[in-house]
Image (tube, rainbow, N blue to C red; front, top):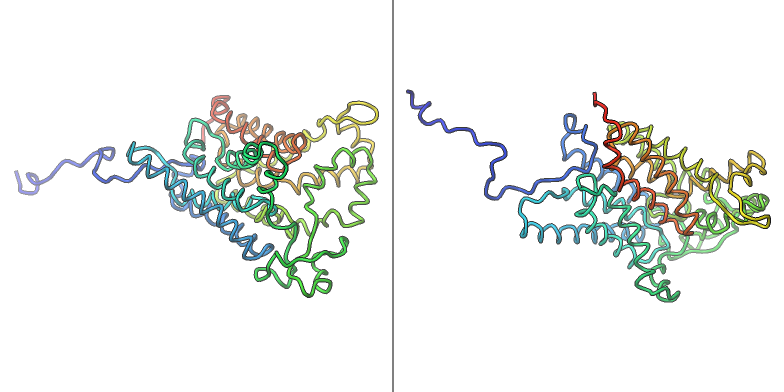
Length: 405
């Protein structure tokens, strides 16, 4: 027997425990990505999404807007890290999300927070995300998206803590005014320095009317639509008056994103671009996004409301409008809300792996995106559908299994 043979040691088993072995990382991306990309590259792509939305927040709301996104992300990461350390001490081999993924989800959550929400609410919602990353997600038995859980908790907690008192609850909503920076003051302006202009003045023409201010006050389109939804449906001329008076932004302004709303998700064009990039990276499905949008449009037709003639559904009132007015109302309600952010960015992370399961999953999300704000008059209620679908995602995996090729 040679010296090499006698000195050869049996190879250690890959699963053998080693001192100082790093914690196992849980996956939050679709399982087919394993053979194609590494865990680090997936996390880096989600970081790119979060960073891009943070830059958008800084562009339209200045450094204060970006700082509040970072505040939410920092709070989420701090709580996540603290719980991770405690869990490591109690159970060293527990599965956890990677730190990159925690930072990415924190940035995305911060970008989805309303500009008018207070800093306290943003920090509190970030803390809920840090906790939710350890309780739910793709790798957990409960596959509710952590951002959906945090958004709902951050929406409900102020009402619970305030005891329903309007003054106490207002403390959680005392954020930035519904304003957006002028085109020539993007990235460098201060949103606190704002002025009121003629509502019909377009964003790019507001420079001359606000020379001594950095930002212009503009109505929050989704809040206005869900607040006056019954009036608009019963009196279609109200929608035309809102468009003529400038109370609703132009379609071009929605695509650009120069309207108050979520800090980093006001731009329809940016959300569409990020969604297409995720599909190109094989991290999202076009069919799922289409299913959610179609489901939301159909669910809107079935929303009940009470009018002068008794109870009815939105379909019959929309049918009485001209096709142009009906399509305008449906389009504005869907484009100004959280529909695209949920359909393109959040829903794919917890989707079932079967075609039929994804179809049911998308229908639930689309219906919830419409029904939540319709009933509760709050944009955050749109995440109820994503949370409910997440609870059912694991059972939906067993509806009809298919091979992945």
